[in-house]
Image 1 (tube, one colour):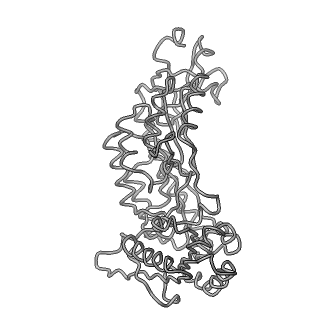
Image 2 (tube, helix red, strand yellow):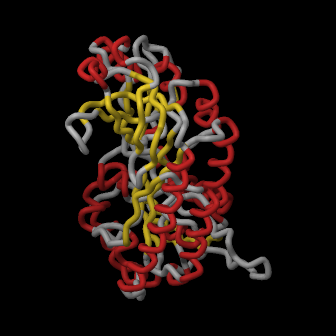
Image 3 (tube, one colour):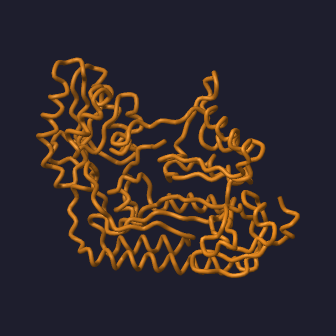
Length: 419
């Protein structure tokens, strides 16, 4: 399951700066309906992103070709037009193909013209401000049927499974038709139904996208106790300028607003995220904004990387003048900051009682067991004489020691009566 990801305005400009309107060049082919669609695209882009139309592609920040497949050799005409504006990619211009040819030849367009940033059909033009090449390089967005998911989870519960993880490229964008009705379930409703399945005690999911983190999903954390007290929500960066270049479709403020809403219903929720350091054009100021976001939110863990260009993505064509040594220094600073926060959070759990799912022998010692807390921390402990019966069970442990990347604990109740 995935959702197109989109750029958004850079709200971090100085208050005294006068924003310059972005410009879009739209070339229309074919019938009157296409003319209507082009007008609609212009309206959507103006309302969502502040784009103003321009008749000159050389002056555009975004170029769209709205195609028609009725005419002969429509596809070749598209590639001919794309070739005439390809040189503008060096200026950071975004290029997209819309309309019927996009619907029919989307994969071919991406293959032959990897510099194209977006490909979308007439039926999805309303989602233009959430566009990205990813859904077309990975395939169309697909959601498993509602009943299929529930049947599989119920089957796992019958086998004794107590915790399930719902997986997807962009799992919270999931939408599924409910039976023979016309009702469409969203991800929050799916979580409600999964939580009702007997035997399931914990629910996790990954990976989610901030653009699809709806108020209903936030409310799910208030209403579904089985939804674990941990969330992995990739932010990637803290600078609005870089987020826009990444086509993430949200600002740092919007991301933080989502986190505030979550913490209102789950004050102690554990948060992890992804970060990309050294995205093309990243300045010290941009990096500072990312660090400010990290300091403010207080992530419990993270996955962080130095940017590496991927063929076929818009960023692969962006100028990148930052030396690798600078990028690595920034990465080390980011990781050290988060590591310090991880240690602080771990230390705060000493003396607390945590409910863990016992997964099996500890990696540190075959004589011990390990389990995982709701907040996704590994706990190693001595299971005593009943160790064999504890695997697969939910038990309470008291945290006795916080280590850099794990916790030590002791079983709260007599292990001989558990299981």
